[in-house]
Image: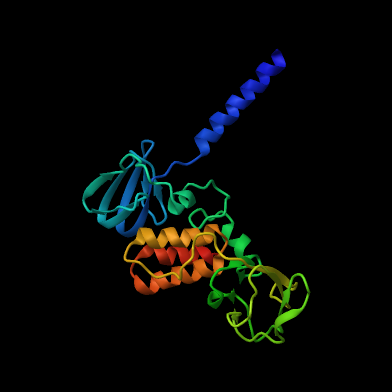
Length: 271
């Protein structure tokens, strides 16, 4: 009886702690041109990009303006000097944006970094180490921090099953490895090796040629940031990192003054 009661207490504590730690955000900051604070749990927290908000929390903009996006898709501009209280969560807020924003610390996320970028990019500064393919024209590996003149790096891409070399660069001279012309076969997986990296050891990665489940059309930038972010996060959630990267860049080109996209790009390649 005592043992059963002890187990019950532990389960209750576990549920309580997990319930406390699980976020329940229903909005996020889309752009910030100025200064302001967030009132949360009786404390004032400076507003910053990628901040997320829960129902009932209040924003106070002291200078300039902030744009808040509710996870229902509505955008609200809060100008100085004014307040805005995040409304109650509506039905239909469950989407890729909400799912990304409410991930726990340490999970793979473009919003919660917590080591996510290093797991996608690796210590060898190559993006991405592992990715699925949706649009072959976007399959470009990017090298960061490499001193091309002093290194004798080489690159080999092989079919994982047959071990056949399908692409090779004997001496890498550029910071990008363009694989868009490789004839990837749907259903197959490939692995690559980069030798003589700045870390002094080979870097390895994989590419899986498998279509996304629901992203069936080529990404076109929308005039709705909600639509754009939902698509970017969907690609990212499905581990289509090549395509998520290109979608973010397309949005930056279309909206060069919209903070959210440049911050997401920085997080994608974050050191």
